[in-house]
Image (cartoon, rainbow, N blue to C red; front, side, top):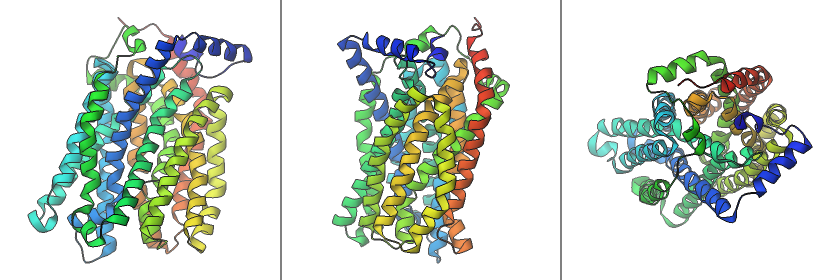
Length: 457
């Protein structure tokens, strides 16, 4: 009953009880908790770094692997390859999620990190189109698909791990560090990009300099693997009396709970679209559409990553105090009301200050919304397939919306001639998230019934 009873604050007495339980931790237990959060989140940092670094250098990658007489066509091919990696996420969610729900959180997180390493190394080491011809984009595509397979379950695996080790009444705060670690990756990637722009000539960047960030990701991998190997299995997983033994069993349970997965997907649409708009797409949008200097664009992206890191734990902590649903209802409304007016104001007179204001506002929205949404999604899922269910909902939303956000935004601008058109896509995503929050009340009752039913033996 712990999993459900601490899903949201019920009263002042409940909060005092949870705080008292948290205070009962010994100094050694607190250090162990902090160490576990750092080790699991560090791997999530690397996963996100390796995955989004492609989007940051989409223009250079397009020139190297997808040459074309049209600059727009080359960029679109590069961005579509960026998006295609997300199509593998649902497969990763089901097959690797089933592996994690069967073998354990620790073993699964080691496997996902290894797959991401192979995919990143493949892209970093592949010769360009001029050297090996059509084989170059095909190999890059394979590397991107491997990255997508891994990322499809990484976020779910980390979120579930953090949710299961959280102290009572603090699950939102614990889960927020999954997404917070991604923001460290965003800030680190932007800072690295800023350094490359300042110190590496443009001709060198176009030729091979864009491979440097990918190589750095490969060099970090052994350190993260060493950290993750010391992770302990969660007590929650050990207490489960039944673990699905076959993928078919996982699919059967997911199908029986398709409404929960669908609502979870709707909730994720808002956060994934918003994230990729203000992070992965910012360097391309700032340089190609606003005609800002690359140093300015990377500086803004760095600031947005730091801002995300600041707001996410606050969002998680706030959801532990006021509940998840109020935040999930209010933030999408704010996005819908402010999206187009703010973006129109930004593109009317493009400058780094307006881009920064735009990024900071939606960073605030993203941090609060994601801080509440991630633990809420973990609480919705049946315990037997918690990782697979969470990952499937997250990966489907990311595959359809988040991953293709850069490509969709580029297409909307090109087809309409309106540089504020991406706000339409963002508002549509917020509307879907609002619908998920409104219908989730019924799903909570269904989820509670499933999770309190005795496990099969």
